[in-house]
Length: 223
Image (cartoon, rainbow, N blue to C red; front, side, top):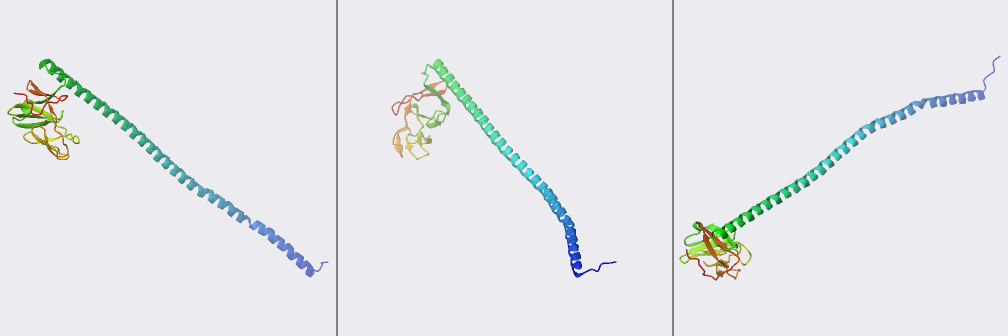
């Protein structure tokens, strides 16, 4: 005999059905969890390119740093090497110059009987018969006139510039236009002092000058 379903029973059945629906809804949330898991997987997958890009960036930065450090090191090493090489060449050239000067002086002392302080200058043939010429190696003006051979300093007493011969043996300083006559006497300009005259000698066709001594203006060595 069947029991009649009351209104209350219908309501209870509705609640039970709702519970099943909820349970079903719980099951229906699985795709949501799977979706979250998929999102996590996607996030992990998206991290991989970021990590790769970061590693590439770091590699590039390290390479640049290494290149810079290496370049700096090489530049410093090259500069040190060049400085040392230059110093060696300068020292060698200076020694060669001193050796040659000492040999020249020794030859002078032996062959001409001159004091060691006489410096070899230009060949006499390069000195004009009337007028002067600058020997830039020892910074003197060699000159001749009717009375003989003479020499005076080519260093301007104003600021140390080397004078140039203008006409005859008169000179002018190119720095500030101090002017000197044929004997090295000051004429005009800021120098205010004469060019010191030096003793001269001739040996084997070459002029020698003793720059350690001064002689009166107008002193000549007859030829």
